[in-house]
Image (cartoon, rainbow, N blue to C red; front, side, top):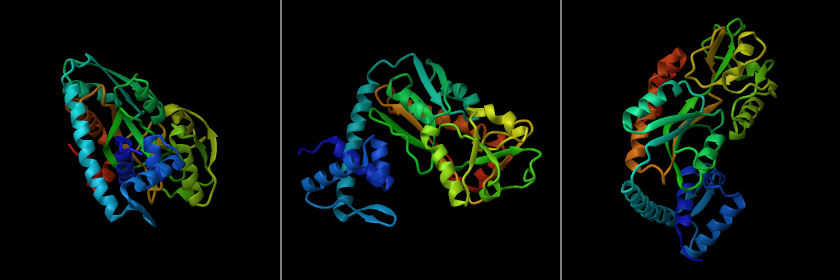
Length: 318
């Protein structure tokens, strides 16, 4: 077996995710496939690269050496591709995608400011998996995507990504007349008798994550309604059900949004883009535009603003 870039990207993905399962999802492989590939690569380099621990897959001394060299090689390869792309004439159009975040109101303006001369379009989807599909088929150049903690949306080359917000909580929306509406937070187990609206992006793992969190709290959620994006707000306001919401959304009329005590539902925000469409400079500019758009709306929900101020480690690196 000859060494190729796939092996280098594999060991880096395992090191970054700390898990063969998560690395396989990132690379679009099955777990048996990545396990087999890792074993063959270990035979090639003459030793084990990772060991299983309670914390996950930890690199051995040989593994750390290989990972360090692999990152150097991949950085140089990526820089070469960026240089080649930078020499080409950029498209006059920029096709962006985003989940249904509060900041979609600012994305077009903020990104247009950092990529002058390009016509910015925006496609809003409830599902990150649909955005990933749009990137894969070339319908999108870049996308702002939310990923529920513990789940991965597979992204395949030439798509890459950069984390914008590494960790933020998911809130719950209740009717303003709900018995818990005046609280500053609510425990998930207090919602055991509620009827739920299915979270958007079930193919992203959001539904499975909700079920897992509720089971850990001692109950099975009664998922009664299916209403994409914000279509469930009237149901919540009327007291027919509750739903999980992005923390940046201001409460819609007749509702309140509350943090979940203990933060049983967390997510991260990433920018994904096609490296054959955007070079490093363009991707960096778009990242700054998206980050600025996100920051424009932190004050939309006072409870999220309070959480945000307490967690500077979650702020975008600009």
